Image (cartoon, rainbow over all chains, first blue to last red; front, side):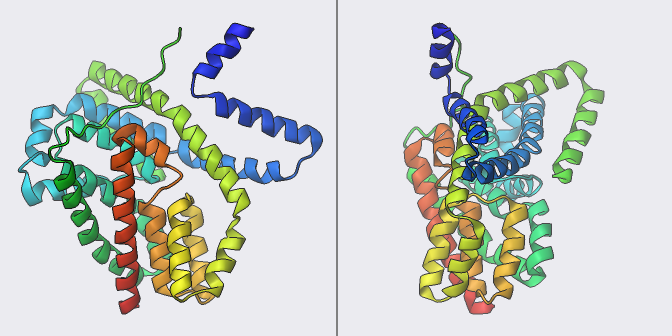
Length: 183
Length: 156
């Protein structure tokens, strides 16, 4: 038993387990705030689980199908404006909150994408996803959406430039969170 | 999310027809990456759930609705930076805010910081980019969002 507890504590699931205990415990003593928190969590969890696994399937497929040389040629160093457009288009085709873009950024980096284009990808992913834009137009109107898009585009391209200049000679690397090995 | 589902389905079909072995390898790789990220994602979602309980969206609407000036602009930027709100809540909320008299300027900065700046997801971002790079990206995005809000305010 002690061993099992120690092993769980070593993993990153400790907060998840505590949270589970908190939710169940609150039910027993009728602690009402827990209900709201649970509902919030459920909402986020549903959002996450309906997009992240698919995102990772796409990332995995992308990984096996596109060799580094080819990706690098299109969006790597010196790929110019064309590479930037590729990155923006790729980002626009995706869905989900910003944290879903990080694994893709890792893969792009691994395949030789330039630093500038990686951050442009992140910018486009967070603000120009097509599923999100349709939602935005529906609620806030085409005029707002169009204007926001036009203003946002040069801003995140500029952010990409700044990041490139800042990170150029700093041995920048993107890491992938690993599964913790047992024992 | 239907969109992503369809896209994944089409990609899977094409990939399966082209090469079964490669497809399964890809799925396996993707799944492994997913499992590696899962605990961090769950931890962030728990933190956000508690945060959203402490600052419910009625409070958000109230604070932003009353202050549409410079103060409202600043508050919107800070709240947007910290919060993580799913898209299907953000936009209906934004539409309500608009009807209750919040200016486009405040709305634009709120939405843009929500989208581009993530204080609560910083631990997640740092796992990939390192903490220093993540902070710089977020600070730049925050400044960018302020500019975007101001420019949109000129036009709308």
